[in-house]
Length: 317
Image (tube, rainbow, N blue to C red; front, side, top):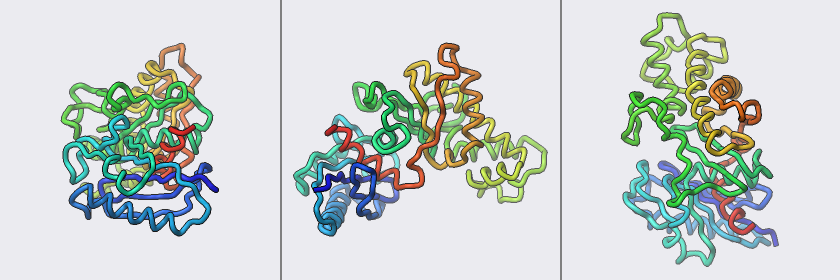
């Protein structure tokens, strides 16, 4: 019997579901619209129906558990707590909701922590006991692994590098505070930088050919690839903010490596090389030239499902 885990990634728009074996192979997958369900109970009912149908289509498997990655997922309580981008408000106990449908252990954590465990089980951090993963998407998430264990803190909300303040008088953040790393090093943050630069600088730029309000992080990447100086300056500014934050994170956790994941990380060396340069520039001497920054090896796969399913393997190993 092939042992498998069920991975569920709950996003603001869609929920992805997969049946994953220990090698990280997805045996079946499906998607449902998160936004289409007004209550979590209805989403869980539909997800459970999909899962049972998927399981019935695969022969010779033993299901070991269900792992769920979700915004503001609390590993200790098995719940989503006050997630800003979901319709459901307050605290939603996902473990309790799934239990009537499956006689299986159910584990919940936030999406960045799930990415960290996925990288540890399936990806570039396999066999690495101390590392940081930073997810550079619409926001900035992170997961800290120390001595082979994810750092949860006392309340399961440890490791929020994206909401470390790097400029006390900086940009307004969605969390209600100012100057969080997320406002600079996310896909939305780099677009904010682009708009500031285009307003303040006078040089020609390929970005000026795009309607100001429609500029995307992809546009900035494509302009930088073509050698556009303003676009390159935007990446440099972003990398300085990220490198500064990583140098501080290193002083706390002393990782063996730092893994970058997400849409902005797909810019490759445009973000990787300057971030490494600035991290080393800001780094305490005892840590210098010890810690590589690498790209996730899971970005071209359904990493969200893999990360969620990895919760199961992590708990039973």
